[in-house]
Amino acid sequence: MGALDNLGAEITHLLAELAGKDIWDFGWGSITTYSVWIVIVLFLVFAIIWVVKSRVSLVPKKGPVAAIEATVEYIRREVGYGVLGHKEAVDKHMPFLFTVFFFILAANLVGLIPGAKAATGAFSATLTLAVVSFVYFNYYGIKHSGLGHYLANIAPKGIMPGLNILVWLIELLSLFLRIITLSVRLFANMFAGHIALGAFAILTTLFVTPLIQEFTLANLGGATPAIGWMLLIVLMYGMELLVAFIQAYVFTLLSAVYIQLATSEH
Image 1 (cartoon, rainbow, N blue to C red):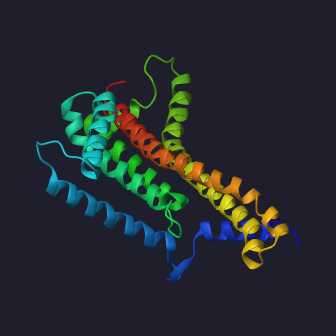
Image 2: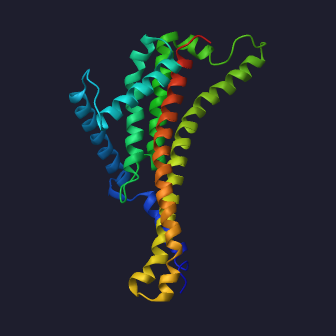
Image 3: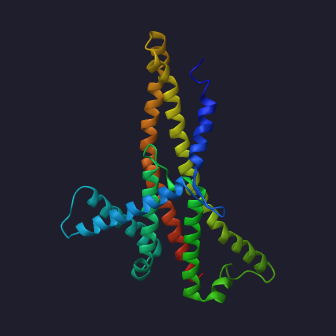
C-alpha cells in the first residue's frame, strides 16, 4: 500500500474536524467545539488585558507587555488617526476597534495551537463579528445624522432624478454586502490556512508512519519526502502567524473605514 493511498480518507477526516462537532444539542441550537474555543479566547483576552493594564507604566518595558503596548499604539496611529482622523472620533471608537482587533488576533493565534480551534475558522463566528461591526457603524451613522438624513445620503448627491433611485438601491445593497465581505474574507483566509497546515501534517504522517512501524532501508527512503512536508509546515506556520495579524488588522481597518463613512458628511 502506497503512502498516499489513505490521503483521501485523511483529508475527509480533516474537513470534518475543521467543521466542528456538536457538544450539546438543544434542538433549537447547539454548543459546538468552536463555541467552547470562543469562550476560551474571550477569557484569554480579558486575562491579557488585566495583566497588561496592571503593568502599564511610564517606564518602557520589555517582553510581551511591551509588544502589546506597541501594537496598541500602532493600531491607534494607523487605524485611529489614520482613518477616523480627529481625537474625538478616536477616543469614541477605538475601544470597540481594539476589542475587535484583539479578539480576532487571539482567536487566530489560538487556532494555530495543535488540537485547538480558531473561532475565526467558523463562518458563523466571522459572520457574527461582521454583523456586530455592521450594527455598530450604522448605529453611529444614524446617531450622527438622523435616520432620514443617513438613509438619504446612502447614494451620492447630484445624480439626475429617476437614476438616483436606482443608484440608491445599489448603494443600499452594497451597504449590506459589507457584512458578507467582512465575514467571508476573514473566514476564507483562516480556513484555507488551517486546511493547508492540516494537509501538510497528514502528508508528513503518511510518509513517516511506515518507518515508525518498521525500520527498514526501504521505509527510510520512503519517509524522505516527509522532510519536505515538515519544512513546509514550519514555513506555513510562520506565514499563518503573519496572516493572523494581517486579517485582524484588515477587519479592524475596514470597520474603521465604515465608521468614518457612516459618521461623515458625504
